[in-house]
Length: 175
Image (cartoon, rainbow, N blue to C red; front, side, top):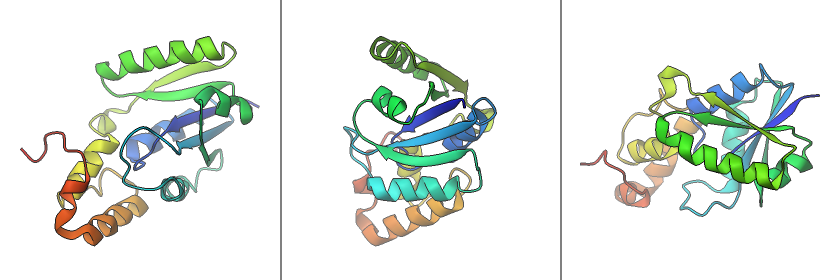
């Protein structure tokens, strides 16, 4: 069985992530979406919430399962018996970061390949940080995320009220 992991923080999972995961099932028999549970950045949703959001978003795809993991991505790949790590590339700047990560992972685990899929054109503008920022400012992200994620974002920022925009690192949309 050809198995791959698709690791990321998924805070939150968006349609670009879903597209990469689904397209990876055309190459691999099973794709394990790995929700990294302890990234070194401020998170909107807990690991359990991100896991549940991803599971719900991808529940209709039998070749995909979703798990959380800690530690090195290559250790997670070995633990689940994956032969490859799938990554998505949106823009040129993604390439440099992904290239360096692939080289480091290859140094740690030469037996695990890295496969990069080019993001579909309709999702090139998407990133979790963009989704978080738009949602925190009361914008409509329903065309960017699965319905369950949209509901979770609306509920999260409604609960924060006037403090919603201050809870997200802003890039430029407020300017």
